[in-house]
Length: 216
Image (cartoon, rainbow, N blue to C red; front, top):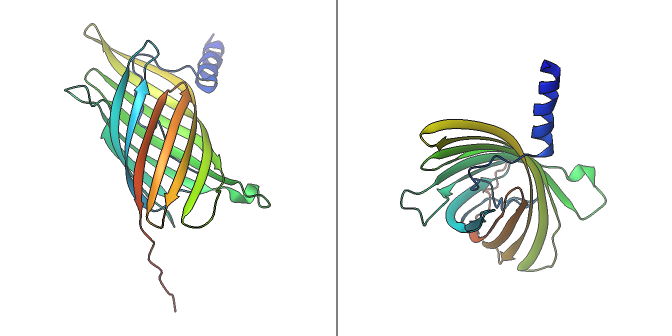
């Protein structure tokens, strides 16, 4: 019986049974192309609820590359709610271009962790996935479409009639998006999340060049 229970829980997590009772996630949309840059941006997103309705959120994302590829985000998930819904998250990532050395396709892995804090719920999520895309165009304006499939471990705690309940499940999400480089400093980002999360958004990021150090 214990072995059967173990395999039942494992299958639920791996195949993707979304946690109900809360639909806003800190990583939807992810705005994560396979070539993250050193930039900071502001993004507006809209989460669609399965039963109808939606909520609009605002978040900021800062990313750096180099010896430590790190991204951090924070924001509000529901601007219409007077109490607000706070979201925070962080991600580690790295290139996987060595897997396809003879093509123009870019790949990066991403592992993240974050949470959404609402009036009567908390959702902790750990997404793991790969971003796949390519760059098109030359000169000042470049277009970089990508897809970002990932699996997420979701742990939700929420209040039902004064009783706190906890649920654990897995979510399968696919993001489709694009980065549009506008000159050397600005990036327009578009993205949408599908399957177990439904969200759409857009934003603008400011890129800064990394300092070059000379070792003698």
